[in-house]
Length: 359
Image (cartoon, rainbow, N blue to C red; front, side):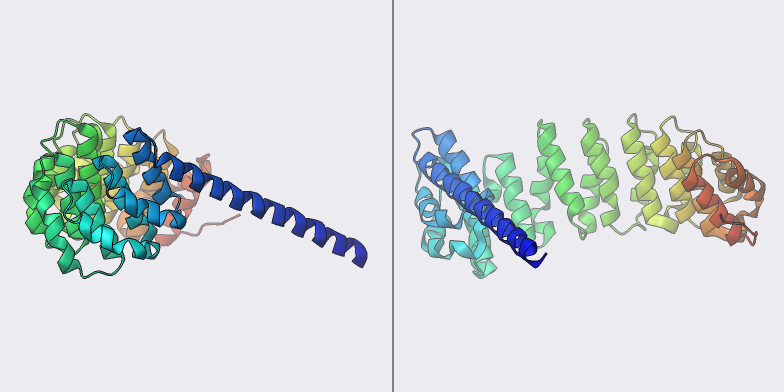
């Protein structure tokens, strides 16, 4: 038995070593292929190779990428600087070339070179001036890229706000989407940015409006303009926007109490996600009104199980304040085919002092 076990271990190790060798060989092949492509006569292929070398963390490519910072094509230089940024500490030998690239005529190169040097612990105050120059670039994308990089570097967001606002005048919907999504990921923004989000909430592009609605929770929720705009967004032609608006109102909580009537109306929305999110939001806004309780009791009979579950969970959270729902909750407990809705109803009944026999 012991001999068989040893043979098995030997076989496993042999297979493992063969696999590792193939993996390493494959990586080396990829490195050599991209290094060769970095010398192509086609600038698009050189730019692609530079990007790949950074994406695949090819630390052995640092000398070639440093040399590519002198490429005649701006895209190649920008991707080379971006690759060095992505390679982190391994890019240290390229610091002289990166410092020189801070003066490159292409704004993308200057931003990426600054990012790479920042990643190498160069004092950010030495780098921000080079990035700031790109705020005057003719390209809207480059201006926005510089603005967001400056925010990442700790610059006051108010300084770059005009550049961010200007980005929404671009006719490129995908670019506007990228801008609003980046803003939504920033959990701290000054109130000066509220008008940008409110304007984006009326953007012709659905995706922009969705992210504008979901991103408004980065601000102080007591601002009545936010609640009013999200309440209005509950009437948006897009179900996804309405759903996002309902969720954000729930996140705001008690400060969104003026939205209760609109959320009650949203329980009748044709979109089930909107109905579910409206139910959840009503449970997070206190004090809950008698009208909301009545509407949520009706929602316990919604044709969609997620809506029924959400309504039952609200009654669980408000306990005896929702005792008017006890008969309907028993109906859900006894008859609902969905185990999650049934479980939520059981918990709600217990929160109201009812005795539930769990199987």
